[in-house]
Every structure is written in C-alpha cells, then in structure tokens.
Image (cartoon, rainbow, N blue to C red; front, side, top):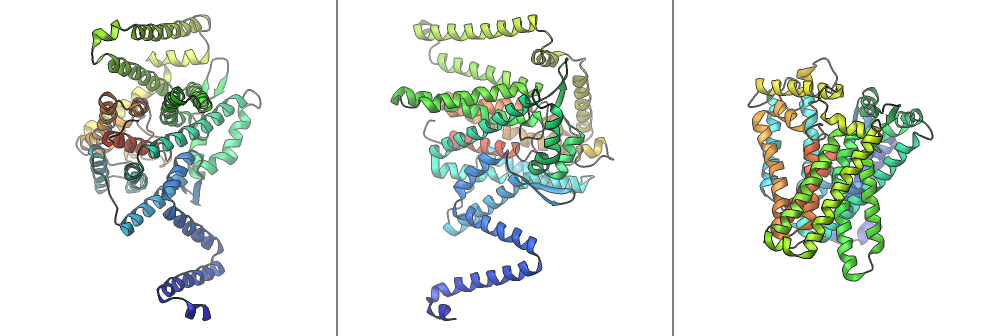
Length: 507
C-alpha cells in the first residue's frame, strides 16, 4: 500500500494491472501448473515479439526448418512456425494501431492473394468434409498474413532489410544442407536403419509433430532403389526429400545472389574474400544436396530455372544493340566461355552415363523421360483422376481439402492422398475460379521480378525469379503449399518481389 500511495497517478493504473495479472497467474499456478506455465511463456513471448518484431521476423526466417511442433493433444499437433507467425501478426497489427501507422499494401499480388483466400473460404459452404476444409483454411489464414507483414517491413526498412533477410535465409539453408549431407553420408557408416530409428523415435515427433510424423513413417518416401541397394535420400530436418528440394529452391538462389553481392563488393573494396568464399561453398553444398534428394521434379525445376536464368542474362546483354554485343571482344569471349562450359558439362554427363550407366544419379535423371516407369505411370493416373474431378466440378471445385475425401473417403486426413500437382489440385478443389485467382498470384510473381531485372537492372530480382521458377515448375509434380516451412518461404518471396517491383533503388 505504501508503494501504491507513493506512485504518481499516471502509474497507478499500470501497477494495478500488473498486480492483478500476477495474482491471476498465482491462482492458475496453484490450480493448473502446466497450463499456467504455457500461458505465462506465451505471454512473455508475445511481449517480446511486440517489442522487437523485426528481430523475430529474422528469427522466423532462420528457424523455419528447425522450429518444433506443439503436440497439444493426441492426434492434434500444430507447427511452431504457424504459432509464431500468428503472434508476429498480432504484434504487427496492435503496434500499427497504437502508432497509427498500420498499412496494408495493395498491389496485384496482394489483391489476388486476398481474392483467393476469400474464395476458398466460401468452399466451406459446399464441401463434403467440413473438418478437412476447415483445417486447410486454418493453414492459409495462419500463414498468408506473413506476406503483408514482410511487405510492410520491407517498405519501412528498405534494401538493407531485404539483404539481411537473404543472408539469414542463406545461412539457414547452409545449416540445413550441411545436416542433410551429413544425414545422407551417415548411412554408409552407421547404416540407414539407425538413421530411420533416430528420426522415428526422436527427431520426427519433435520437428513435425507426433501425428504428422506417424503419417510420414507409415508412408515414407525416404528410400529409393539405386540398383545395387536401397539408398536413404537426403531430407535433413524436413519430412521428405521433395519438401527439402522445395526448401532449396528458395535458399540456393539467395546464396547465389550473395555470391554476386560480395563479388561486386570485393571488386570495389578488396576485403570481402571470406564471405565470398563462404557463400560460394554454401551454394555448392545446396546444389549437392539437391542432387542427393533424388527428387526428379526438383531436377526438372532446377534445370529449367537455370536455363531461364541463362536466357535472361543473354537477353539483357543483347537487348540494347545485338550487333554491338557481338562486336565487343569481351562479350564474344564471355559467350565462348559460357558455351564451352555448357558443352563441357553436357559431355561430362554423357561420358559419365556411358561409362557408368547404372549410377543412381544418371538412372534417376533418365527415368524422368521413361513414361513406362512405375512411379511415372502412377503419377499420370493420379493426374487423370484430378483432372476428371475438375471436369465434374468445373466452376467451384469440390471444396478446399476435399480432394483426398473424394478420391478415398475411408482414408484419414493425414494419409498422403493428393494430386502430386499444385495446379491440378487447386483446379479439383477450387474449380476454375479459385485456380485463376491463384494463377494471378504466380503470374505477377513472375512478371514483377522480370520487369525489375530487365528495366531496373535488379540483380536480386533475377535471383528471386530463378527460385520462383524452380519452385513453380517443381510444383507440377508435388503439392508443397500446406507445408509449414514452404508456404511461409513462398509468402516471404512474394513480398520481396513485390517490394523490388515498387522500390526506386536497385539491388
């Protein structure tokens, strides 16, 4: 009471609020210690995020592949990334209201994103399986806001915030790639059975949640037939090799840009050799891991993305004056060197396949073009099912998340029944209307960085565009958008291409 009486009038209200909170927490601890601890931890975390939102965005980017899942109840777990994004969104929204600077940026990507989210929300009115549609909607509602948060912070803090994000993303990619390479090589020392046991008993439940991990164990895609033995593919801290490949499609281009960034700085200042070598090593390790995933969809996405990258660089060089491009000696030399490297790599791969036709990598690549191969035939059958479902529900689809129910009603929500194609799954579940709204998002996700590179000479836009092409092409073979790691990275990349499109400066 003495303390209360000696406080200034304007501080007495705050004192009473904190006193009542401590009394409430004390009562809860006496009644339910575990719930109280969770409540108190959540309150402290929310307060820290409110005070330091920018640093928690960095933390989110870095820790996406490492954040543990919350196993709230048997059969119900939630990814830690989704909880953190919700808390960051709440802090961003409340801070914006209090400081009166809350801004939700509207461009074509944000308009199509909002339109898509609103339309798929309406599918709950006619879905045959309310629970699955609701769960898919919760995934989108908990992660889509990240686009608007990141876009707002990019506008506030500019290019330095973007570069810092790319560095943190690249570093996270390096650690995941290092762990993935270690996990792949360990099978030759300790045996793949030990690695599977470690993931099954310890890591899986911690990282992905007990329920999700159980589904992964029952339907694993970790092994593939290498001819001489079943090899354990690289998947690192992600639940399967395909998701790991999608993750690399975002981190490897960021590392590639940082090589260029530090090469340019080293050329000017001459004291950036270590970061240049570090990012070159990180980029090389990411590419090695991409091949160790043995994900054929990832291979197709990677090779077509690199082809687009080379094509755009050539177009950028010759678009002003094609004649002068060929007349300049250094341009002819660069073209000759590039062509020689391309031919050399093609010959190296050809010779490797000729002398070692049974090596796992060449077998995996050549099987892409073998329509009669078992998994290819299976995928074609799945695509046919998805397309027929779309034809029967052309305008509105069967409802978000209802694809698996329509194909096999008796199966559980966690059973891996999906169209193995982002576009066909959205066509089947949301019809032509939902698909066109999603197509609007990816159309501008490509047009924005393309315009920024060709007309603003933005090198970071070229890196972002390469990653998005890799991701979108790989999406013809898998459905990664419900991943609590991949969807946030997709939202962050969309925010970065939107910022680069609107930014006056060049990066």
